[in-house]
Image (cartoon, rainbow, N blue to C red; front, side, top):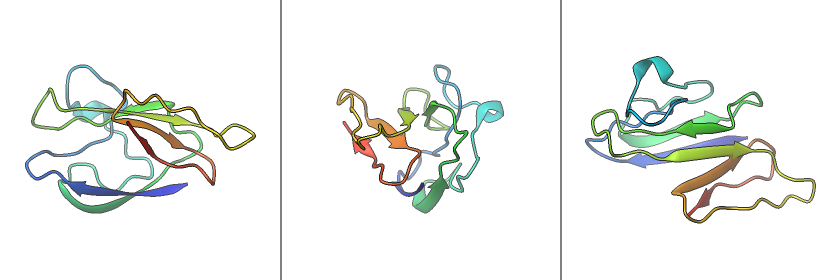
Length: 103
């Protein structure tokens, strides 16, 4: 599945990374299929690979307290996915027919 991420976060460098808790960490940046790490504005694509981790994080490079979580999961056999509405970005599916949910 390929997603377009529309960034409009001037002054807040966006990254995908594999760890959370200490802000941006260069050594943990995740770039597999994603072309928008370090960007602030524009449209960037992310082709979510089948071997993507189940969880990624998106910290601001410059501001430790600005971050969020992405949960990546497979769709169930009936195509339904539960969404935790307490999260900013709840999940991105690996399979065709999945959708991005916002809390």
